[in-house]
Structure formats: structure tokens, C-alpha cells
Length: 374
Image: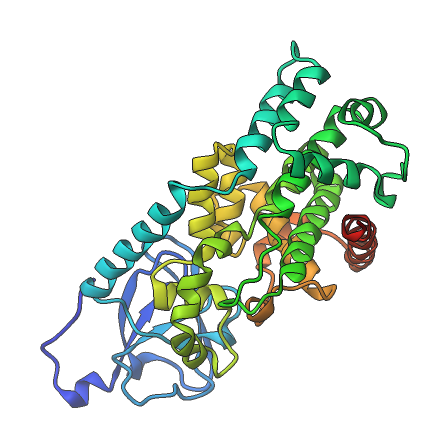
């Protein structure tokens, strides 16, 4: 980062350092050339994305040499931020490595069983008997699979008695979906004190985003429906890894969020140097999750940076609709908005969104109702 040091205090107050919200390229702008009381848009020279400045109100500080981080999609929400120093960047890298090392060595048991089951189901020469033997290695997951298969959501209440029976009644695609839900339910049903999320809320939100992603994909890109469900289901897995680190820095997070203007993932980036979507993507890589799903997890908060990953846009919208349906995740639900590019890409009508929200609520209730039964 280039910092202009040889300017006196008077000149310093006449300049504004603006950080591109997309690529973080830094601009040192002469404030005397900016139209006061108006919105200004100009293209970033580095990434060509538009930078929007809202100059209708005075920044919170008179020292305009501090970086003004413009918002690409909502210029009214641009705000003053501190630019990471080389020292803070080094600390950020060290913290990220520590987070990953803590969990990469001892990952939750879900991936080993679920991914092996997915591997068996993707092999045309494998049998349901082989699948049943893989699932049987984890009795807890086996029980959850049968509970899910017998939920009102699939219309087979009380009819499924074994994994083999489920495969006959439901088919390989639906069974794969159930295996993924059963495998992730325990991992995603954790209380996250740092994020202020109760265990049931975390699971319901993950399930809602998975279901919503599949419903959206079925309208926009039906061939992505199954992948969309999986990506939506695990989109917030990084929170599990980051929770204790967020909790340790609760005072810093509360201080940054006291104005209620910043999305939580942006505060993560400011305080930690990265956010839960980055950690989630790293975990997905370690699990062997396909790249298209991993990218959707990585960019579910800012799909415009995903190099046109369709799943990222789908999960981004599903996340928003889940929150709008009352199934959010604590303080992370604050300031949730949808990117303009996602709205353009999906091109759904208001009636479509309302229908999706209604179905998400209905389906989540049906699935969790059976899961909560003993």
C-alpha cells in the first residue's frame, strides 16, 4: 500500500483516501475536486468495478486522510475504516493459519462418512449394499438418515425401515441429499457463543439456506439443484471454526458494530483479517468438496467477486431469504443485503421470492419436526 507522507496537516485535511470495496485498491483523492452533497461514481482503475461515494453527509472524522471504504452496491453505507498495517496483516495470516491447523488435524466425523457415501453413490458399479455398509460405520448418522427419510417432507412417514429400503423408495438422488443432511446435522447443531447463535437456530438456518438454494436453482438452473442444496447447507461451516476467536474478541466486535451499519462479515475482515466464508472454503477443500461448491461457500456474501459462479449467487439469495423468513443466525443477520448482480442474474419476480420463503419455512418445519422426535 502506498502512503503519501510528505503533506502538511492543512493539505492532509483536503485529501481523502478511498479503498475500492472490490479489490481494495487505494486512491488518494483531492477533496476540493469532489462535488459536496452529492453521490459520485467512478470506475476502479485496477478492477474496473464501480466505486460509489456518498458525499451528502460529513464523515465521522475531519481527518480525511483516513481511508473511506466505499460500498460498491450501496453507496450510502460507505464508512471510515482503518487500513491494515503490515504488522496486522502478519498477525492476520498467523491467526488464519492457527485456526486452520486447529481443525484440519481433527475434523468433525461427518466428512469421512458422508464423502465416502457420496463416492459410492457416484460410482455406477456400486450397489446399495455397499452404501449401507459405509453408512453403518456411524450408527448415529444411520439413525438420523432413517428419521429424515420418514419425515413428512418426503411423504413416507413410518414407511422406511432401513437404508436399503430408503434407497428403493426414494432413489439415489434424494438419498444422497438425506445422507448429507444427516451427516451435517450434528456438526451444524452447535451453539456458537461468539456469533450468539443457539444450536437449533444454526441448524435451521443452514437447512433453510440449503432448501432455498435448491428451490432457486430449480427455477434458474435446474441442473445445479442438488449442488445448490449442498452448498447452501454448508455455507456457514466456517463459523464453527471461528466462533471461539470471535468470542475472545467480543468487545472489539461490539465496538465496531455499535453503529449497526456494517455487515458482520465485514467486521470479521476488519478485526481478524478474514471472514468465516474464507475459513469455510478452506475446510471444504480439505473435505474434498468440488470446486464449484467450495467457491459458492467462499463467495456467498459477495458473489460478484466469484467470477460468475452461479451457485454463489444462488446461495447468496437463499441466505437473504432465510433471514427474511425469520431463520437468521444471530448478530450475523444484521445489515444483510442482496447484491445488484445477484438480482440481475436471478431475475425472479416478487411472487417467486414470497413463494420460496413460504416453502422454505414449511419444509424446514417438516424436517426438523421429525428430527426432534425421539
